[in-house]
Picture 1 (tube, helix red, strand yellow):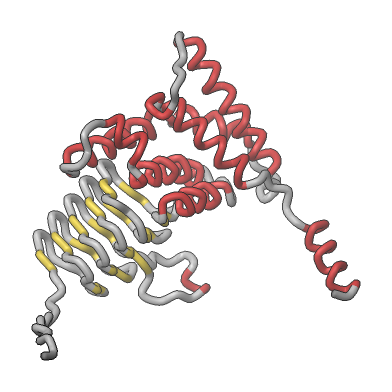
Picture 2 (cartoon, helix red, strand yellow):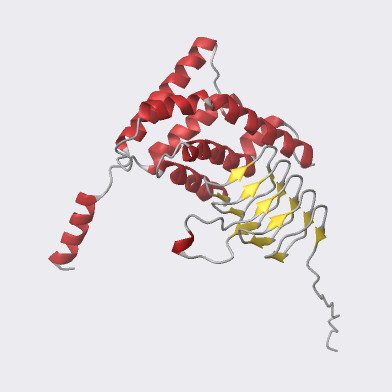
Length: 270
């Protein structure tokens, strides 16, 4: 390698934005999850004062992370952090509905404790709801780092810009993709491999709704792909496995993929 290559790397290092490591940012979110859900911990707090102090520490940490992230030079990071933590009860309430949806919908779920400790769907939803609150506050970069961290751990890719209602149930979850402008109502169930994506991708569409709307009570089974910003899945509809949809579906519809499967008996050679 010649010196020009080393100079290119040096210039990149000198011009890079000052952003805390992904590990530091994810650790902050994990500590917040631990505080909201002590089921994740072996040791618990013994007083309200201890819990209050921990929330204050996390607020200070968030402000420090935002201050170190120079992508937003004119932001009032102290106010952003304060507003975010004032909204924690709302986030917590939404997450509790997600737990209820999983417990009521999954025969394999034995307890809330199990869901909080072991379910990748709930883990990804936790990170999404934290990241979405920061996204709404127009915090740059950090929301994407959070949801991509959860993506790396669970295989579930939820963009922090997506708008998702209460009682979201993601079963298994591996391969689920929820795009930036997706809108998901309440009591929606998604199974593994579901894609809520864009029909086409072009940089000029940055401010355009590119991903589908899923109304209340919809169930989407594994491997289904639903594309397009104008595509609306009407409430209480069921979308079967491996369905490919680019058009809207009326309320209470059942959509399924009809495949021809042939079984041939193998005759043993004598």
